[in-house]
Length: 470
Picture (tube, rainbow, N blue to C red):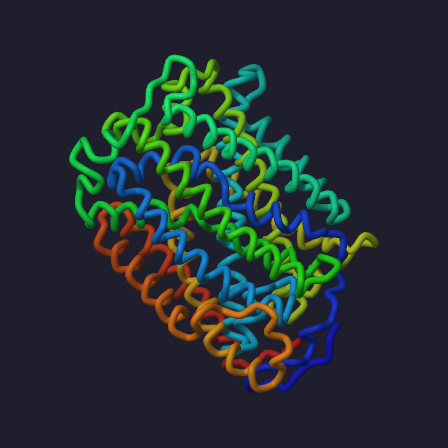
């Protein structure tokens, strides 16, 4: 372990910042790039985007631009800090260095809790699709199979995780690129039995903003959480051959391309089809492919969504294990989780994360509308709290890095500090919207309760003066 810094105050900036983690360095640049691209492209885009279109109409493209811009700012802040101080705990380590142990403890445990609960949603969703294909295998059997397979992948060398994610992400990105190409050909009337559609669907049906700017705002609330998952790339960077350079490249390439995929997809969808004909809960991608005349459109998208869910499950299990390992490194989680296998894999951290994941899956299968619903609500807005701590940490650390180690600022936040403050204002606005929205309010209140509980534990630990371990 690293030497212990003073028990009071923030840890020295340079101490341990450039040291290698005791984990494997098996991730390559291509792994990180595709992890950044694929980690955020999931069922929320392929299926959940229909709900956003229903409330905003063609204005959903503006909603995605706003939500995507917020995600880009967060990733730029994360990239700046991670390039300067790569660590397996990423933003948990940054929060600790910027604000103190309570912040590192809080953001680390909140993010771990978020990931292991979402694991259940992804495993169950993939199992439902697989059960539809092979009804002879019960849904719980598919869940068990997925959890065992991806636990094995994460217990093996980290390069295996990287390869899984690389090919999963490649398939998702390829699917979106093909979708965009086919849609553009249909828009311009190049495909057989198609005619140019013009702007009728954008300007008709109530215009581009059929529900005004309030619809755009509601659309932001519907889609902003779809950008969660980008953070894992900064966690994974610590296990690459050149963490500082790798995370900078991955962040630069990922944010722009993801924004292009999201906004581009929405734009071609609402251009090709009247927005009022799209049904919330059903994939607008399937509707477009059916309209174009692609045979088996439903099956194709089911396969893509299936892969997207398994990819997210794999990435979240990885992110959860590395986060709890980092917490254990700093004495904020049981020290027994620090065991590292010969291949540089924190096996006990993986097993601890998947164990809670199994519990979450069982709760989802047995009590989806009661116990698990409370758990899901408890993490509904946690991502925003994590993002807010990332922004505050960047505000504090940027000044310290400039003073103590300016050479480490190889990737800089745009227009600092103005855009950081703008991002914080944007997150505050989303929280206010959630409080005013009857559907989103329970998620906000439960998440606020979970956050308050973690903060209370962090405060008690701080008062009791538990020894700092690093």
